[in-house]
Amino acid sequence: MTDVLLLADLHGNYGKLEAFLSYDYDAVIIAGDITNFGPLEPVDSVLSRFEVPCFAIPGNCDPREIIDVLERSDAVCLHNSWISLGNLTIAGLGGSNETPFGTPFELTEEEIDGELTRIVKHMDRNVHNVLLSHAPPYEALDAVGENHVGSQSIRKHMTQFDLVCCAHIHEARGIAEVDGVTVVNPGSASDGYGALIRFGKEPKDIHIELITV
Image (cartoon, rainbow, N blue to C red; front, top):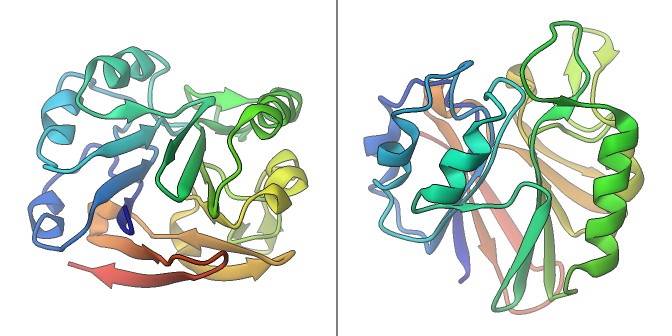
């Protein structure tokens, strides 16, 4: 697997998905907020539209019950888990750090730190090591106005990875390099935004293209 389509923040608006299907990629990873506080019924059929392996985590706007839906779907749920595929290891952390809005899937920084500590300890190290998290690291594509709202715990652990694929902050679409780690927010797929990631054969050989359909 070398070419990956990264999507996030569909928020129940699946009208742009058909356009993403025309791209050439080996796998799809979805960085959360598949729904907008539900409903969950369409999720399985939406994910089944991809004819390549699909890996997904929930976002803070997804009901926690989406984990059961993802685990029964054609996709692989990577929340609090990891998977190795060829020269690529992807670790997943769904939900977000706490927000002022009391959304359905929020975690304390202590919970995030605990899960990432466990994941980093046990996951297989690979040529490319990717963290798929809905929330961004603190001070990395996390600005809302003048405020940084990313997770301090993700920032603490991000140097254990080569790439962080995140979402959550719609206005922070982009690519950044923080602490020697590349961070990408593909933007809202509901608005036709995504990213294509090509993983080369050597460490740090990662190319990212932001796309719009």
